[in-house]
Image (cartoon, rainbow, N blue to C red; front, side, top):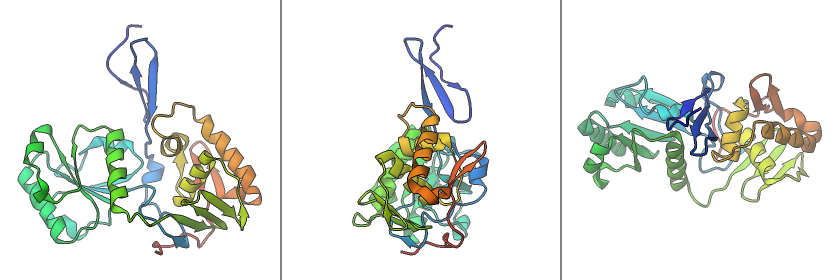
Length: 281
């Protein structure tokens, strides 16, 4: 088969690029399935939360095209909501970790929306999505955190979101998750189950922390590979199964905390009453 320079979409979460040697390199994106997007996930932990930012971001896009502005966002696990780019919609807009103003069609309106967000004390970082031609119009007067091209891919968007959230988070804060008998301290990379220290490898700790930070939310193996192992990891989904099996063995009689959803993936089964309506700082 002749080598092609175009990429091929082979599933909802896999894109294959042919290389000069005729072999194909694969990148697995973290795709949010309908099961994961039916409702906004709960807070990042339970009972005790000391965190600068959530594990997954809630992104609002202010756009005249609510059907598909910045489609690369839909290839990420962040919760994305698109609302019309008019000031009246800001009144009832839900809380967001990132606000993106779509300025590709009307720069003047985009600048006006940024000014409104700034004047209302919008605490979340604000991005502006532009075409290359619109970059020349942006200045510090817009009061925004970043600009992103409308053609940006999912990896670039995710990196910009993570960096913006990291800059906005107080540096002195660390994450402690206390839920269902588990205490996970991100600062010291330690975890305890009913007071008993868990001897975890780095990836086992990261997997447990990620699941516990998103209680009751179901993640596919591909999503977990992307979120825990990263976009540059090319191993198979069996890696997740192996680490889940090892985690359950180390959790002992608390192994039921990591639940299996048949034909879908895994979730953290928080004890009833351990998922509050809001985070306690």
